[in-house]
Length: 559
Image 1 (cartoon, rainbow, N blue to C red):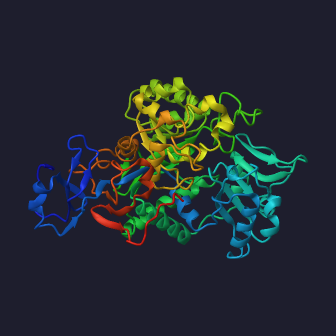
Image 2 (cartoon, rainbow, N blue to C red; image 1 turned 90 degrees about the vertical axis):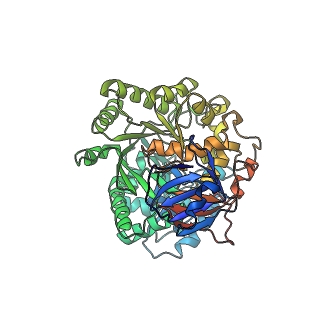
Image 3 (cartoon, rainbow, N blue to C red; image 1 turned 45 degrees about the vertical axis):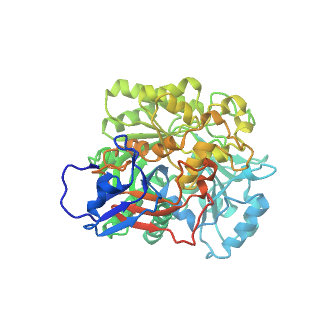
């Protein structure tokens, strides 16, 4: 038996007769787990923990099911995800005409004047591939300002009413780090990219406290249904993102004090806001139990789908551009100055990088930072680390930079990425195997709302790399597959390490938090292509069952 050295008599929960995959090398497999309060106190065989059965307040027979540490999603946008659940859903529309019709039906359910947000349309699903325009949707949305994002969040579509309310017209100048897409006459088409999004963002009213509370509770329910007990919230995008995220953090606290919050959150503010945290004395890994502060996030570029990911060489299908450095990255010295100041203040740096040039540039900044600010357990992170030069892969391990990646994106982007960047650069795309082999720490997340939060779909993606269109049954860039064991490790131990919480979560270890998930099937034994068929039967947080699946509920869809 593996247990804490001493603990008072009395067990609140005993889970037995299961396959306990602990993610702890001291005792990798067990059959039973004892919980007291919100902590795990013993792990071992059924026989070893049998003495606890009579004193336990609740005994659960796992009936051979798989018990794992609660999943930790290393990259979400939690408020936006919850808000999206109640918004118009354009993710599956297959043509501009279907997008218009879906919007027409949706606005009939909303009060005139209400902004229509979110959406998550993806023009790469359309044949032919083409960007939507304001002209496409104006006639069906005359009384509603529309500001709907592409699935990656880096490109948005406004209707004419939204542009008028935002004061955007043909005379609006272009924005460094972004793009206003224009027609041949110079008029905005309604498409805005990256930094240009703030031209419309500022016109959107801030959400009410009631709306924010409702969205976060919806997000929590979705997470718990998928076995996610911890999330690392990368914040709210847009020009008012910092303001909105501050209110999100307050709402997290209020829900926690009210006893309504069960998901542990590591929250991040934008890097330019580092002084707000630093001057308040907040440092990395300041943790109240359910809410951790001290992380700041920055952007170095955009996204592949919006052709704003920053590459060394031009896009294959858009040879006029290599993508865009972010607005923050346009002045590399100013970006570095913010990084160095935040690091000196004791904050954790988390930087978005998609294109190979963006990743290389961020690695350069991280290397410079370590030399100039000196040794420190700083847990530098690159979010996405999506397209890498072969020579930069080893640098993640050499510099101790965590690769925080989202496997589900490979299923999506794999359908069209080669058309965009060609067959050579694709070889180093979502290079999970290469990063692990180089010795890098690889943490898994979803990027929800951009992709489904389901860790089971994320594991399926990392292990099989089967794209959503079925074109790669043996896997897209199959040499970058990982094992199920490695994928689970990335969603638990590595994700906890990425937020500096490995001492309290990430494995089923005595003394750690009793955050656990019970699965209906053994993902280590079944054919990996069947992993999405496995369901989350129950989610446990702080030793309490916070979600139990109804027998008639068998979700297998990724969306």
